[in-house]
Image 1 (spheres, rainbow, N blue to C red):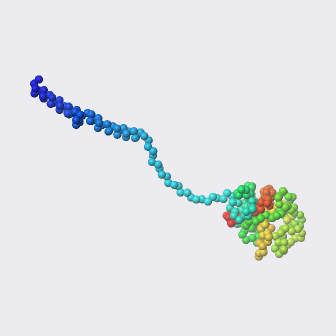
Image 2: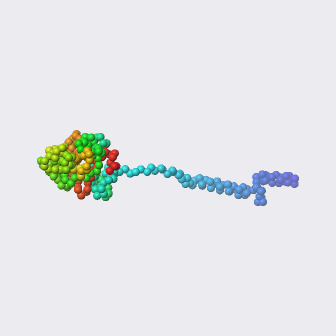
Image 3: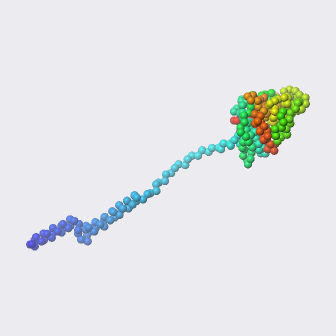
Length: 280
């Protein structure tokens, strides 16, 4: 091979190697350099892939604080609504109706223990005066006076003592309730001659006065003109009939209530329309 041909082939080989990037380690662009530059790119790609595989904590969602409406706790029962009872009272009877003008109502009995009022019995049907409740009672008005009252020291009845814890007087002839406002004994029990006026012959009033307790309305008597009224009792109900101003319940219910009442509990009876109980 001529020297010219060999020189030409050598030159061609050098050019071919340069085109393939196989220059020497002084390296302007050899294969080793390609690996060095590719490595960071592959590493970054692997790191990104790794990050995609690792679950990340979600951004916590901030929930708005709910607005709370302050509500007053309703009373546990109707006795809990009462505010004027003596601190020593641990028995109370609540007689109520839907309004002033109705003679149909209910009676509930409650007892207090540990500072809380609880029902003693189920609610009982009751009848009131034919004109319902009144805030301005007067003698002869067939209405039931509103208010808070104690129970009379003696219970009465045409029938024998049903087992009450109060003193009990079994009625006999000439036992009266004095409802004559012109006499000194107005609004009291008397035995003897008829006191006159609208006084009641107690021993003859059956079945209403088979058993009854005195509601101490206008006892002791307060002077008033016209007189404030008399003879308000808790007595036996005649089904379907209102009273002349007393509170009446079924005989079996009445016996339960009279036996339950305890003078040591300083009981009170509250008479009012349901919407007016907070007054007491």
